[in-house]
Image (cartoon, rainbow, N blue to C red; front, side, top):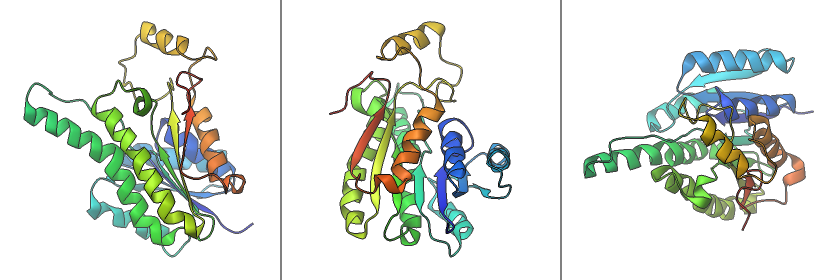
Length: 248
């Protein structure tokens, strides 16, 4: 089998690490990108060992909202072809919303973290994408579809519109672009210690399957969309949320 390469942002923990591990299991070499160098290096070593291919996962520390740092990822790719780009970096960023300056800062931070990181990484790697057969994947959120996250919801919803545009641009080159939109996934840093037992149960009760999601659930969706089997799927938002929000 020819060498295949996937680049996963936000790959140190949670969903990103699960996605990287799943794609490594599928035989991809992986570049994981994130801001926290220590956690990223540990994740790369662990995933490489678990898939039985030590050294197949490379850690590249970079803040993807800073255009000057994208060169680190491009350099790590070198002259290789990129089969899959998974834009997972992001999260909810709070702030002081008591002033207009605070509101502006919070909105810019959330847009930078969730949208600009995806745009810049994808654009940086766009020339290297496999033609035909490349895959671009964006990680959104149930908050984009039902609200409740203020600037975070708006930022994740912006990914949907951009994905539709990008799918139109890259489709003629047989590169697909899709969004995976997770619901409540318990085992992540997203809530950063803020989740109460009551909040957890309320989110579980909102599903039709009676359980919280796991990072592996999201990774499974990404693995499908990254696979040759999904070559006729593009411009779609795939909700992975236990039925708490229906597709439309």
